[in-house]
Image (cartoon, rainbow, N blue to C red):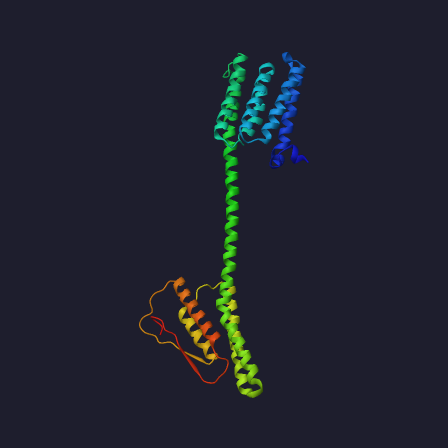
Length: 314
């Protein structure tokens, strides 16, 4: 309910301060109404409240109009009661700093300075005399204060945008990492699990016909399972780099368990590759090996041979 009467984002920091200042202003004006009279004082205070409440909710040109109206009320009260009323100008100086327009802030700041000059000219009290010396720095602070608040609010807004951008980047990174894990699961574990599936089917076929062959197939399943466990550990530890020689050796061993011979002919010196390039080539070898296994026949009618040809690995 309270956030409908007072801006929710300002309740914590400003509500108590504004309430105390307004109470002090009313007390000061009604106690020393002087030549103004009670009704004139009440009318000016009512205009002050309307200006304050209007400025509290606006950030556009309406804020500037409300601030100038409130400064006018304070200047009139200060002329009749005393310059001490000008201290309450900090209320509108603070609200002015939340404007979205630099031009409005400049006009409002000029209005603050003019309200001080207006009061001391009408009262015929030199602003620089010793008794009024404190009001010059007060005027300067009130004039500059909206700019300080504007910079502070702008910084807060930029920080909010930065936090939102960082949060969005974090989501993108998380999504990319999930996609990477999915790719790694497919590339790294896909062929190994396919081999376990094929070997399990072979073991099922041989279990009644040739127990020794079935045991060999089960041994291959055990070895391949150990390989899968190792691959999972590497994936969990985020081992992104894949060695090409190591991947070739792994392909030879994996295809051997499927009774497919892979011969690697090495010619010349291996070129220097970056980690990314070597990893991409290794993944290509892995995908090719997976495709070979998928197309492999499920029987042992005869040994099959595969030759991997590459400019440097043949």
